[in-house]
Image 1 (cartoon, rainbow over the protein chains, first blue to last red):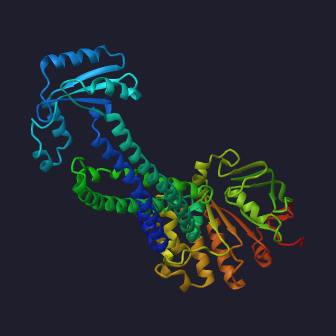
Image 2 (cartoon, rainbow over the protein chains, first blue to last red; image 1 turned 45 degrees about the vertical axis):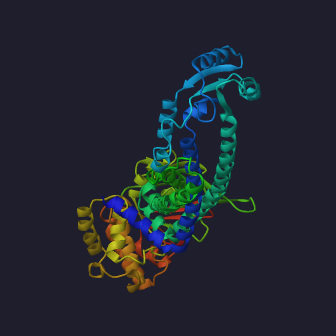
Length: 296
Length: 232
């Protein structure tokens, strides 16, 4: 199609003519999208680390299996279950066998074979997983059951999880905040660049309008110029994330062996989260910048 | 072909004064006519031309061009209107990085004409304006008169029913201007309506075409086979 070759060609000419401006646009889009992408990845990382099982339960009552205390007897276990079910503070109780615990563990750490090898079916204890009617009443549950025979320990998963989530969400929001400011800067920069390009070629566009070229035919090269610069920025930010995030994870893995990290393939899969905002941001900004400017 | 009915156009200046560019202008131009629009600077000539291509819109009054009512014409239909009008500028407005042939072809390319049509029409119109041998020259290699011929070729290559020329001889010497006028006359003979804004007295007097004279935005004279001043 000669139309498209014309439009693409014009956009490319514009980008080259304004080389330094283009570099500025690409850099600011890159920074904003890298931060945005990092915050999306952090979210995915958190979701992967906290399986939905952990999300549903609030309290884990681990049962003795003979490793650190005498194993729980069947009658003790039945009694404990009956008491829990009769307790008004308890909403739901699930029993997780050692096998189930091991299976869930395997799923959660599928990406980390060395870590998996260090654990076998007998390592993880069976537990009652309890959902409370009021999540804040953990203390009452703890005092009531922690000294029962056969109970190894009681852990407030919710509290652990909440601390972890609060920490990551602080990081996430900070990254999003900086990304938003940077994105605003990028948007203004794109608008300015596109206007400059349109101004530099005003003779050409004036002729186009007077010989009856359609509005989109006049505008599209300029809009595409902004979008192309944005997509280049998105590609660079994608490259940065794919190279540096796994590298960061490798470092973290030495101290955080129990956390399952996102794989490089999962990180690479973030590209729609970068390309999408890049197109919307630069395209939108270009269209608004040309509003009225190239109007007939 | 062209019809103005009680058209008034005012501009607002920075100091919030309004300047009347055209006042209650009523004029009809038929298909195939050759019309000079004359008057001093600020008389409303430019506004008249801009209203024809709807670069500006009137405050009141009705304008018809090439069968289209410009008052109610949708914005997305403007390109269709512009394709019915060829426009020749005083300063030529050629693209300096393109050759003569490319400048002319550009007008067809950007309205999506297929390649075979472009390859056929561009040499034809360059032949018409007498520049066949300059097809591969760049505008800066041409004289002013030649550049204006390219500009006319570009305006006429799509064979529009109307050709507007805004001071086409304004930057040219009298001898060269005569050549340009002969060319416009030849185009007019192909049943193309030609409207030319000018204040070149010699040209108007020598052509003896219809003259529409504006003064301070008002029509003060509309004379078939007229001259520039009130000579007769």
